[in-house]
Image (tube, rainbow, N blue to C red; front, side, top):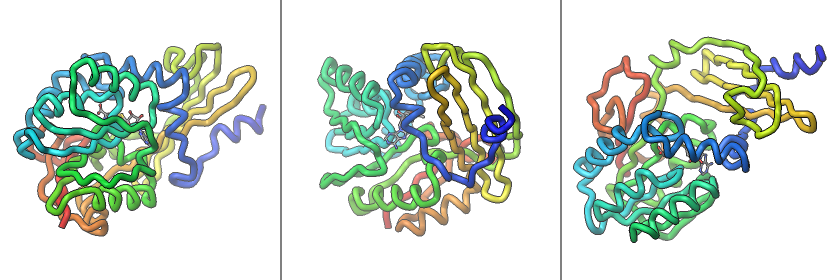
Length: 279
Ligand SMILES: C[S@@+](CC[C@H](N)C(=O)[O-])C[C@H]1O[C@@H](n2cnc3c(N)ncnc32)[C@H](O)[C@@H]1O
């Protein structure tokens, strides 16, 4: 028991484990995630519907989206942005490793006859000969990736963009990092049964890495027959650190905003968005 508790409370090295698929593609959790995406009034998995409408309206005007625009949406989920953008004439490629979300997205696109191609794949491995005007990665997905993974994906974005093409993505800010605190909690059927349809005990250890500006939510889920750990990493960014990563990957940062709906940049905002152009 004591040894087990020591293991639960152990702090891993930053980004030591990558378990994103346990969170998003597991048979049970992917069902919960899809229902969060589709709940139009909450900001879980996807932001609320009113925000997405506003965001897509802004994206369409900022990037002059219309017939002939080619957009790649990394971590597209059930295609809530992809569908809105396709309705404005864009041809969209959506990439997501959740089979459940991609199946939902494909059915919706077929029903509405939208020009979207969905790819059920780990976006860290996505390859294509197509070239795009715009790459999206929305709802702070970049923050879940290690420095090495971020380097890889930014160079992948660079490769698949047309000359002068742009990336729009959002990240967590230093202001949000300052509000985070370490904690350890445990709960029966933690998060209302999110992790399993069966009875389980869930431990949540939140670790803060001050030097690296990272927070880890480490979940330990204990069922009668199995124990698993799910590591949810959050990299927080100062604008200059994000800019450095983009510049190293061959981009220049054109503009910062407080969100992907074009709200003017404010350093107090918990998130911020960036437009980076391929040089
Ligand atoms: C926070 S959700 C955001 C969904 C969408 N961008 C939105 O805002 O509505 C993150 C999405 O990225 C997907 N995802 C996370 N890691 C991934 C990976 N390595 N490869 C492909 N998809 C991934 C998840 O399945 C999920 O649909």
